[in-house]
Length: 94
Image (cartoon, rainbow, N blue to C red):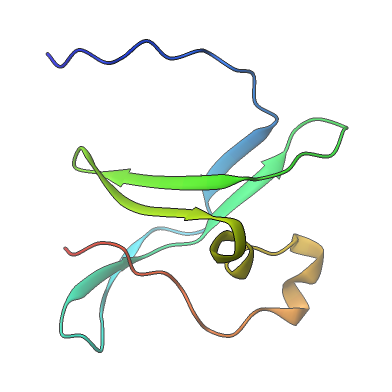
């Protein structure tokens, strides 16, 4: 058993789920990557701000996005018709 540091529990207004099952894709770098889209939903009536996202797998950090990098990969569902360029972070190998 691994001891985890004490973490302050904080109520969050954001629910996160996969938009579709993750899938393995072969990258131009010759490696296999996991492709997935996350849907974040504000479950409160007040606006919320997404400051960062951390993707973990196999007990390690795979991807961390903040600031301009996070903004480049996020959009409001109402903006789906104006989707960003087909550019997704590819953080992990399979």
